[in-house]
Image (cartoon, rainbow, N blue to C red; front, top):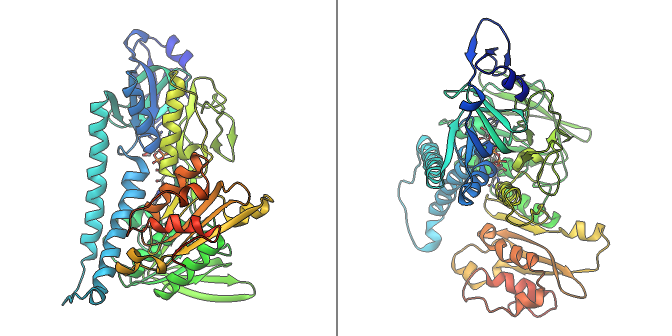
Amino acid sequence: MGEFGDVVRAESGFAVDRGDGSSDFGSSTRLIPLPTMADIPEYDLIVIGGGPAGYAGAIRAGQLGKKVACIELERAGGTCLNWGCIPTKALLKSADLFQKIKKAEQYGISVKDLSFDFAKVVERSRGVSDQMAKGIEFLFRKNKVDYFVGKGFVNAPGMVSITEGEHKGKFFKTKAILIATGCRMRRIPGLEYDGVRVMTSREVLASRTQPKSVIVVGAGAIGVEFAYFYNSFGSKVTVVEMLPNVLPVEDEEISKTLQRALEKQGITIHTNTKCENFRVSKDGVKVDLIKGDQKIEVEGELLLSAIGVVPNIDGVLADNLKPELDRSYLKVGDDYQTSVKGIYAAGDIIGPPWLAHVATFEAVSAVNGMFGHGIPKRVTKFPGCTYCQPQVSSTGLTEKAAKEKGLDYKVGKFPFVASGKAVASADSEGFVKVISDAKTGEVYGAHIIGSEATELIAEYGLAIELEATVEEIHKTIHAHPTLSEAIMEAAAATTGEAIHI
Ligand SMILES: Cc1cc2nc3c(=O)[nH]c(=O)nc-3n(C[C@H](O)[C@H](O)[C@H](O)COP(=O)(O)OP(=O)(O)OC[C@H]3O[C@@H](n4cnc5c(N)ncnc54)[C@H](O)[C@@H]3O)c2cc1C
């Protein structure tokens, strides 16, 4: 791979295009003229990757008046806006609405000839992504971020080039580099992803055809959301999870409640189960499920694999740059700098928890730190959400983690069935659970399962950030009737003071 030094030596020279996205310097058949050093534009910051980490970091640098560029391989907004958070939530909104209308009778409304157009559901989701990506492109212009579509490559600290796309062959000098190239879906080894019978979330999000039956491998947030989506529209769904619970990172009580709710909706769930022997044909996929000493064959028109992610690190850095890695993720210090000076990283590329809001926080924090605006902060507290119905959200410690840490803790719980607003809305499934220090009442963690769980969790997030106590939450007047009263009541329940249970 080319290096900064080569570029200096190669003034007015040529770079060899190997045709595989990488380039080198010297003599060969396909020569790209190299700009002279004087021609190379100079930036304060070059961001590689335009997802929630990359675009937020670039916009923040723009806000600080820095000369900044963002290089994005595909579309501004990254996985989140184009192939992740946003398009899935658009699909889930259609699923929720369809389910609500099916239950319209209970609200005194009758609906005749209810139907749906699956292709239009997907079309709307793609439209939402497009609108959001355009929004980021607008924000780039507004904040004077130079935006290049292409593959970014770090030649050396202070030197970046574009190795693919219409700007291929462009070089940039820069004071700092932020790598925000994110992750892509992990694939099951040996299984061919044909985009027809075997897909990751990426292909599924673009597919306008509804499968009659789906095997979802992996019951993390992505697997569970798609299982709920397909089941809502009448596909037969089987979920397979290797670990003992669906949403394995969540509080066990919440995971078990969710599993019961999803099973009641008609989804078949196999936990503690491994998949073996995938047989893909033109009609579908057959797979053996191994559960203890039991072997069950299941089949589906589609197999959706949702078994986690792997970092987009290959082809991003010159071979001689060897930043320290942590299980193939870029390792960063408290200031988000990698072990190579001047090269920073944020978002999914630095490892879990692989969440968009965490990615944004990290990048903004990194950029503020780079340019002397406050001390960067690594993420320790964050909310996590799953948008099936009932929704699941959490922040801070699970009860199991509190136990394992040997903490002296108390639990306060409040069921939505005791909430006037939840009952009035016919959405009374689920509960709020808060874990706090037994002596001081400081909130350690909160877990919600219920229809608006993902909106409600913000209050507990703030409480944890401010080291607030359950008493302070209890003593804060919450509007009536709102679901947020359940937050207050769960806090009050810690000391046996909840009024409505
Ligand atoms: C189906 C799905 C649903 C999800 N739902 C949620 C959710 O509800 N909430 C949540 O918080 N998170 C969710 N996530 C996770 C979320 O999308 C990621 O955590 C988030 O996008 C990470 O942001 P990032 O900027 O680090 O990386 P990304 O968003 O992945 O952006 C990285 C960008 O870098 C680009 N890139 C890669 N290599 C190069 C290169 N060499 N040069 C230029 N550009 C490059 C990629 O094209 C990509 O656009 C979901 C993910 C998936 C797949």
